[in-house]
Length: 263
Image (cartoon, rainbow, N blue to C red; front, side, top):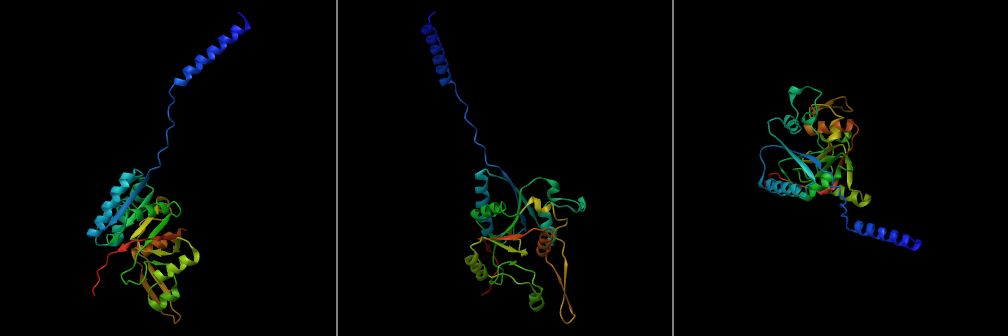
């Protein structure tokens, strides 16, 4: 066989291989699904308004539709608020003092929403996504005095000695702070727990029972002593900051707070 013939045979063989290769189906590269976050919704209380139920129903259905969240609901009722808070974390007095939330069951974020809060799906998403930046995040809502937000920047004992309470932050102060800084997250030492998200890792650094009340003692200049019983959310926030965590307020989230008003 001549050299030309040999080359022709090789060319034909390559062409046949190419033809076969061109029809071999190639499996599509799978696109990784977004990670599913395990979210626990804590719902303390047994008296939910129609506004809350409408907000809750609309939110939970849309969360399920996204297929991005594995949702667990943890309700609790009772006459003693610290016990109710503990129950929403799946805590049980019979398991002893070294227990963890839900007996060590895995989850990513614990979100607690009080029964008098009105919110939207978009605000829940903002709260969840905020935990990618900060492990403890709360939304803003007004207190029943219609003047202050339910959070405190500093444990100002001088202010407490005069007023008998710590200094809450006003909407005007937040607006001014946002204009001056262009920041979104406002650091605080205390926030009400009406609309708060906490990552699981935080609970590894604080100890059961988490919400036990403390006695706040402050001595005045004249030698007299002020004693105050901390509420369960104040005690909890103090434990968080003592463990080295910074509580952040997402100032882009302002939810409604249902309170009776006599006019």
